[in-house]
Image (cartoon, rainbow, N blue to C red; front, side):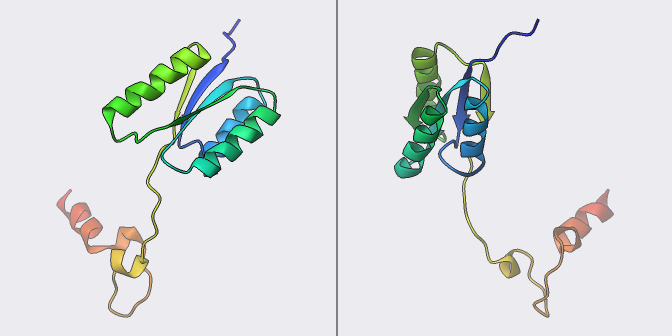
Amino acid sequence: MAKRLTKAAITGGDSGIGRAVAIAFCQRGPDVLISYLEEHNDAHETERLVKEAGTMAVLAPADLKQPDHCRAVIAKAVSELGGIDILVNNAAHQATFNRSKIFPTRNGNWRSPAESPSCKQQSHAA
């Protein structure tokens, strides 16, 4: 019989995919630690939703680019949840880009990344 997974740590768990994962997990039983950068309002909303589902939510604000912060998040999960059965590494940097600057074209039309000069050079070199 498989061990029941009861403790999850989710990075980037304050919103978006991380929030959806936290909510999905808590509906199936695991308590969750929600790590996030600085979006405190979003994190508290996720915490509220998880607690409403009847499971524990622990918030852990941290800059995961810093090794000490990573260790502190895991230590908090161990102390508050009693360990980690599931780790969801969802932390990411959110940004928007002007796609014409990423893949510029002479006539302003969009082209796929595969059509970019750097991809064509790589494919010919192989």
